Length: 130
Image 1 (cartoon, rainbow, N blue to C red):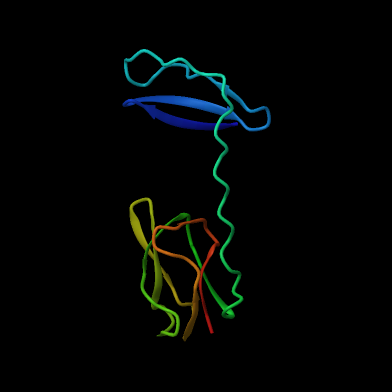
Image 2 (cartoon, rainbow, N blue to C red):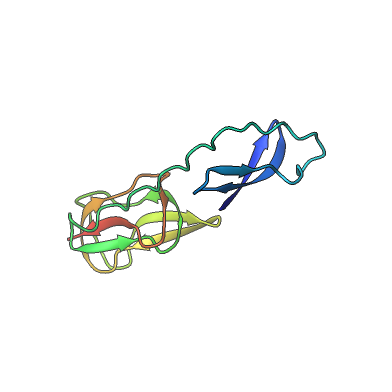
């Protein structure tokens, strides 16, 4: 089961969706004091497919992986740039903090496997070095 908060016309509702049986439970009560809209017996929208993990280091032998789940905020380097150990390559935003993902050792950027705005999970490959 998955829990979602859905806002309809400015009123928020907590909804529980059961994936296997495709059943939707009606909200217990709206968060705002407004009448609850009728719940139609329609199948829930399918959950968005998880984005496949980015390249697994095929372009370069040294991976730079996301240290936490978040969004790609900024890309500091481009393919072909020489970087030193500790230089930021990609910056992710997680919990309103900017977290630099740095080069683990000296090298040349072989690939950038993300774009600004991408959602990433901890361990996703963001870039590779040679």
